[in-house]
Length: 491
Image: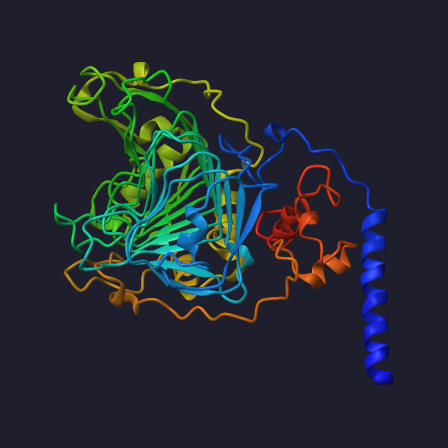
């Protein structure tokens, strides 16, 4: 009885200390979140996305996809400001496309205990405003029920979306397609191994992505092992408003791509700044190495009039000449492009002149503070991109192949030189082990142990939404951000 009494006494003392500690914390007023980054390290046009800060907390406790309580589909279907945290790691085998239709949400994949979350079988589609998605893997693969589709996408005119440190692969169309969104950022993601010859109705279709927005930022992403669209710029084909299409690509790494680093852009303003292109074994089979970009004019079959084209700013982009397949003459051509990026521009069908399509001044598209030199970005992207809180063996391999300029696998339907046709070509999905979730007594998304350490009350569900640990972020956000503060340079 004495031991029991002693335990109860200590528990009361600990709880009293936590409550007393919380009482001593200063509660800051709710800040103007339109001036606070979504999280430390957020950048670009979607930088000030609020997500679900201050709202309800929903915990994913099941890897099932039947929509029952505790599943990701259940949490996504909820309405109102909310944060989705995870008490389990593993593969979620989607039974149909996962459509995020209700916005004001933060999906915090970094909270999953163990190896993290991976979506399989179908597309994860963002179709709502005010969305933050972090540290989710979407490795779709081939399912007999679906046709050609993307691993992750967002193609509706939604507002304020940021995708951070996600890994996307094994699509049957594009891996990462995002266009027509307003105030959008895709950053620090690994986009790899679209399936070149799988089930797409048009045949071979191993593509990286279609990108665009009003405005949109794509930075510090790694695109590796795609036959084409690295990326394709959507332009204003579907809006008919080239004056609104404003897109910037900076510090991306593009490895083992087709003959074009990127192409299209039928209407809009575009910055290509300090991107790092690395031809690989597949690139060497295409015969054209110096193309940073191939510009297109609209054919008039979309919302634009015929002849509409984009205006481009190119500066600081670098093409790595170290591929062993390159001849001295080809390396010489790359040297010219590296000295003057305009040598990397190809105008399709000679519809205009270089003077009309290029500008010498960068467009003022979005605020960004993370711009680096191309060579520095190359090193940092390989170190930090993707769901790097715990990098899986797929991303580890992609990074090493990029670093060494090699490939490991070929496709079972005829694809070669690093292009694959189905997930089994590379061994399929790895196992994502789960650890025991830390105890969260009040269900506010913050483990008891962390709350006690930071003088919060583990039995007060309301303190997660308060601003006591930071004047800019809620206590729950402070906790979630602390889990991954190492995944950005200089953190």
